[in-house]
Length: 218
Image 1 (cartoon, rainbow, N blue to C red):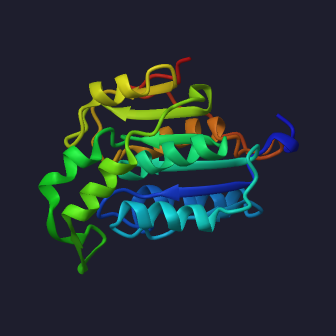
Image 2 (image 1 turned 180 degrees about the vertical axis):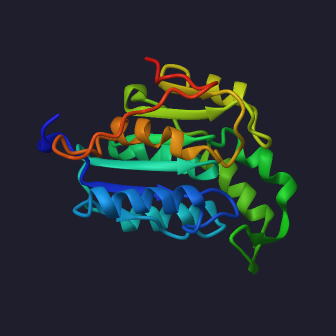
């Protein structure tokens, strides 16, 4: 791959009750700072309203290139990322992505605290669920441009449902692990390669073979 094929713009979208302070977001931001300081990197705090979250992301990425843009999303952020990638033609990596968030978040109605700052509170309402339902399931029209990292040990989402949803995409199934993908470092090289983030002249960062993980499959 020459530098003309490199991703030039990258956005990370966190999950429900999460933030840019999540371990995955901070680890990816650290890699970008060390290895690709030229990359246009964005990791916004998303509001609880799905419609407002998508409006924010679309406005923040207005004018980004289609051929060299990319998005990473975790959990609910994976649901957003799938939609955004299809709209913009970007490469996309999703981590334990939400498949039916309106169904799964119905139990979360009411006041919620953020994982990384419990003192920060927000109200998750029926109107927010209605927004998720109205937005519908994003189509996957370019599966070759999408990588799904799915942990079979996810305690919140059904890995079988995620795998079925992203059938035809590049899949990296992980035996064990958890919803937050606490072994994220083991999978970071695969994300970096798939998203075309590494310069040819940069340091080699081989993906290690870890028990219970698979290489991306066609």
